[in-house]
Length: 447
Image (cartoon, rainbow, N blue to C red; front, top):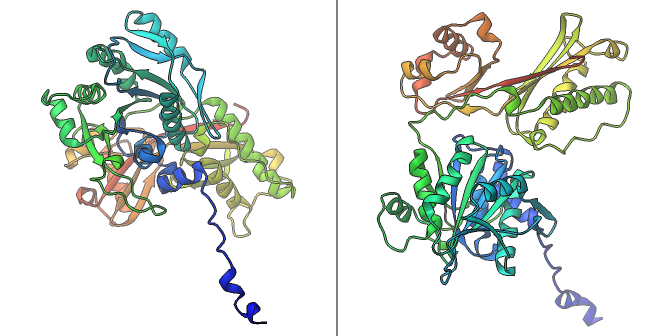
């Protein structure tokens, strides 16, 4: 009897569930999982080491990566006793870590070897280097999901100028990023970067020198950061294993790059999304199982906006718009399509009408913030024909690109947009005001 009263003394606490690799990295990324930085990032400088030691810093680097990135050049510093003068690309088909598999950009690798036969060669890789590279690639894949890498091991006597000339054209394309890893046990600092950009300092690692020279060539600004996350303790910026440098467009440069519709979503993806939108409407009206969210293209996970229009002949029966935000595109399509089925909808779609309507889908790209310091500079920089979003003192409004047909004058366009929230264009100059631009890709059934 006595022992039963003290049963709790003999109980052992249940072990806490272990986080998976993806859960840990996803927790570090938090809300940045589906976000891109407002200014394009071209270069990252990371501490050298393995995942257990430097994983948090790599998570901070993943936060800085734009989701549009398609290729990562991973530069690894040479060992202290390296006498190699060439760049070595390991002979691999891809990198594997736990459940992640990241392919190499084999087409580009072969091109580099053809164009630089004396400086770029294939070589073997030891287990430590392979493990480190695989872990880093897997961390970035948690955010990017679909990308290719070009791993480059530098020799102790590699000509850094040759490396820079090789990488520069791909950085200017905008969909490639250089990730420079320092030797193990070293961490980047803004002071080192500044010294390297000014040609000062002795014993600067080659990967840091390359990052500094490329940043200078492209006119980038270097920032120092550490990972902060709601699921993990904040990391001290002075902790060498937590620092990361990221180099992005300077504040005085035009951050907005005019995009054609095909640059952020393809015609094939548009067809898939049209079919998914119709299947979503059919599942509600015909009481069918909801279609599975398409996942094979990374653009479906982007926080794009959308406008769905129901057409009959040349007539627009109804349309519903959701601006770009936090939700992945496919999830937003489901929410937007449901507006045609609500009891209080101005136009309520019925089972009999669905076969006779055509669907037009407009996909709105991720907005890019436009930097300006005067109204004249804003008018000069504002790309005519783009969609515009404004946020002034917490009040938001937006115009789709077609509004330009009605109001082609930039100043009148801005005046009409600001009027929607009771503001004037001058209010856009306030420190907390923000103006962003986006483009639209249109797709229509039967076209």
